[in-house]
Length: 121
Figure 1 (cartoon, rainbow, N blue to C red):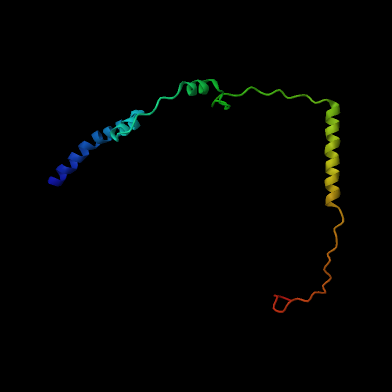
Figure 2 (cartoon, helix red, strand yellow):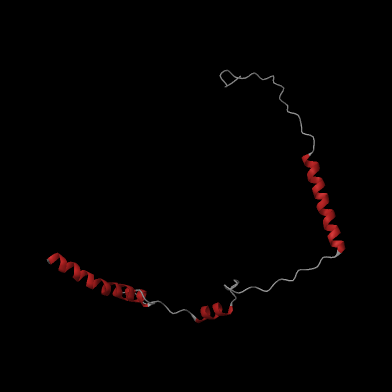
């Protein structure tokens, strides 16, 4: 019977303990409370120039859910397109010529004997 009473008492106290624990984590006061209990100083105030510079400087990031404006695509003239096509064709021809170049023959003529015990003959 005593075990049953102890168990029900613990079960009754659990919600109150959980509320106290979770309530202590609420807000920014938790760190200052712990610091003051340990004898430390409170957080220093942020200097005014830091607050002003952060508010005025752009972040460089696009906020979530905001679509950036589309960039204008410059129209290329026919001469520019033909020049680019010639440049790409000449690069392709140079690459093909390099791939099809004659390969140098190996300088090994088989005259060096294999060492004894060098694996399969």
